[in-house]
Image (cartoon, rainbow, N blue to C red; front, side, top):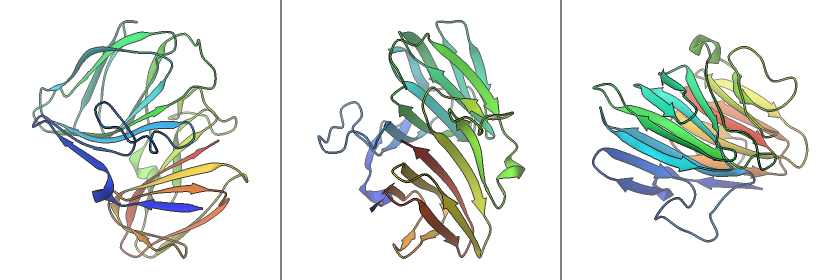
Length: 235
C-alpha cells in the first residue's frame, strides 16, 4: 500500500522565527489517526531564523535526528556536548532516560532542517549524542546511508541510531531511474526535498511531497528533471 501525502496537506505552523511543516501530530497539532508511521513519530521540515531557535528543553525515550539542508544548527545538551552542523552533517541524539538540549541557528542566514523522531529499540537507554558528516558529492546518482542501526549499513559518515532502520539521502539525475529493494513486511517513508519523482504507477511526487509505503518491497523511482530525496527503511 502506498499513501501519498502532498506538501500542502501537511500542517503548517508559522511563528515568525520558525516556519514548520509537520507530518504527524506534534505539540499543539493533534490528529488521532495521524500520530506515527511505524517507529517514525515525528517528521518536521523546519526553517529557523538567524540567531533564534529552541531553548533548553527535556526529552525522554526518543531517538532524534536532525538533517541540516542549509544554514547552520547549533546543539548543546546536559551531557556536555556542543556542535555546529551545516549541510552534509547529521545530528543524532538518544534521549534515553532523560536529557536536556537546545537547538539554535547561530548564523545570520535561515537554517532549514528535517527533524525526525523515532521510538527506540528498547527503553532505558543511556542518553547519548553524535554529529556525523557525509560527502554531499556521494549523493549523486544513488541512495547514500547517512543514519543506520542496521548491521552492514554502518560505517564512516553514518550516524548510529538505536533502531532497526536506515535513513538514505540521494540525488537522482535528470532522466535517472533508481530501483530500491527491501525485506518484505518493512515500511518505507519517502520524502522529496527538491525536484520531482515518479513513483512507479502511483504518480508523481513534487517538492516536499511524501509517500508512506507498506508491503511494497520493490520500488522504482524516476526523475525527469532531477531530484533530491530522503528515504527511510524501517520495521
